[in-house]
Image (cartoon, rainbow, N blue to C red; front, side, top):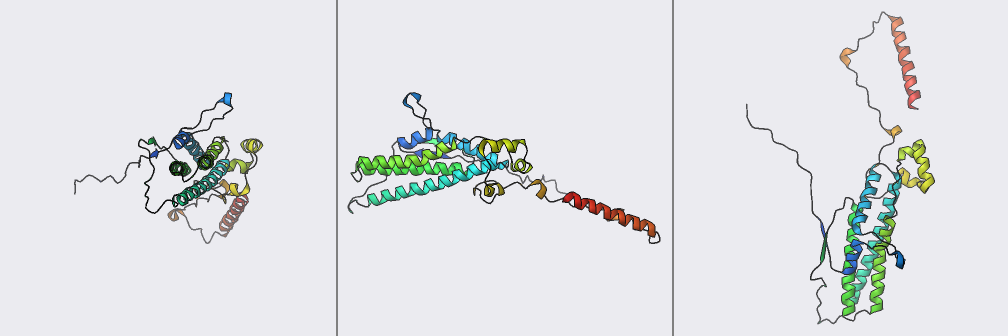
Length: 272
């Protein structure tokens, strides 16, 4: 016999380090957020780290079969994808602006000599999309600042790009900070219990397409199966323990069949 020890086939959890690099003050301030100033009537806006935390909370609530979390995840996904498409359109427009340069002139990309670096701790895919959106905004601002410096656009056009690009991100951050956790599940709504009634009184009913799962974020976790839809576990019978009925005992056999029929009828009624 071999004395070799068994090989351990299990592995540890995967880990990865993600870092974002930003080159403009505008993108850096968006990452850190904006503090409220009541004297100037300026409302605070959360930064990207707080946004990533909120997205993780929504993901956990959706994983717990909360339909309101699914609704929020769907809304934020739509806003994020729309914002990225709009931001990429603005970046493409800047490429057209730089096409005005003379053929004999070459311009390298604009970058900071000391960019700001931040670690990214995201537990949801939508959180990463928000980080991508911020890097898109940083790229837009680098191109816009360089174009203004080279007299390809004027100050008014530069401010318009800054406002439009910044609003695309800020509107999503403002929307996310409005999320409030509602302790309810789809099964609560099916049962129409106290939690479901309180949730509907607080924020209204869930749209049917969201409740049924036909309209959900592509990054949402799998839906839980309803209690009344879970398949029953088949009963396994040990054939060796079954005793064949005595063919000469007609009365006992008839009684057994009658009892089995009654049991099946009760089971049918309980399933319906």
